[in-house]
Length: 69
Image (tube, rainbow, N blue to C red):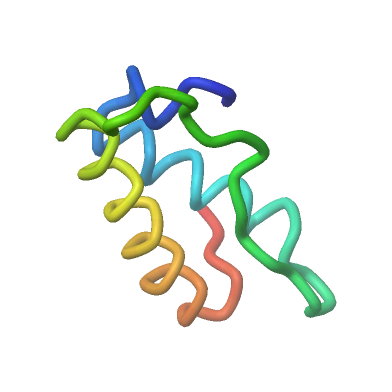
């Protein structure tokens, strides 16, 4: 999701994080990180908010024992 921070909704971000954890966290050693970051500077408020929401979702779902569903 190369442009998820630029065009995604909060729900899109949450779904993306949950899917990444579901698919990658089994067995441990998983690190949640985006494959790309926006190149625009300064970052728009939407992008800043989505990056913060991405981190918050990672902290939330990363503590739930590898979320399913």
